[in-house]
Amino acid sequence: IHVSGTRVLLQAMEQAKVRKLILSSTSGTIAVSKESGYIATEADTAPIELIGRWPYYMSKFLQEKEVLSWDAQDKVESVILNPSLLLGPGDERLSSTGDVLKILEGRLPAITKGTVAFVDVRDCANAFLSALEQGKRGQRYLLNGVNLSVSSFVERVARAGDVPMPLFKLPSRFAKLSSKFIEGAYQAMDRIPPVDSVSVEMGCYHWGCSWSKAESELDFCPRDPQQTVNDTVQDLANRGIFRKS
Image (cartoon, rainbow, N blue to C red; front, side):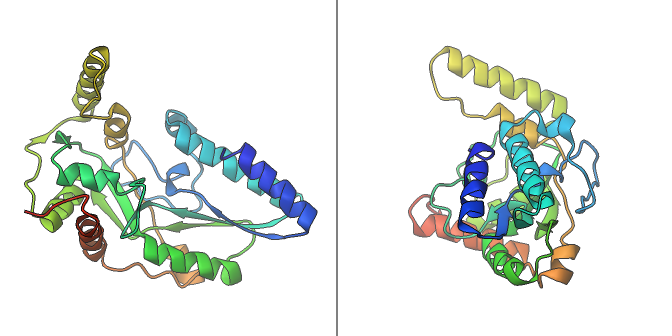
């Protein structure tokens, strides 16, 4: 869908003589590393050896390549926006806030030693509007609100929902092996695993990026990250998905 579907859209744009395209991608195409303290910028290249392990991020990387190819041929005028993990109210499919819900419901068995980046969806919406007028052709813009350790992120969510923190912190290697073992055992019994080994694996890496370029060129201004977490948790409570004690 990300590659072939985008190509169909680009062909339709060419036929309709529509030039401007704002591509919603993800920071995960460039902003992930094995190294602690890594903060990506738009100048970084995709770490193929990592994102090649995860089909979603690899397909978004290939989607970006397709759009930039059309831009280079002067068929479209593209701007690529790369938000980090999107949090905030209104995620009806729990596509991003599902990670928050796992913490609130005690379904996060242990804390890994990776890092996480997230941004408020409402701040990103403003950046998308700005990109229509101010975004530079053929450029990408990282949209992020904060870079945190997984432990700090879990602590913020737990505090907002008034739930206990997970008790264990696991080294990356043990976290990966144990999650795969648990997942395999549950699948062998034809039961739904309590952990997702891919999510655990991703949580062992470092996801961090700068938003200074978007700040200077798109007037991007992320709000306080704790407010984003609080509003995310409150939205889940308002919709009856999570019940505060």
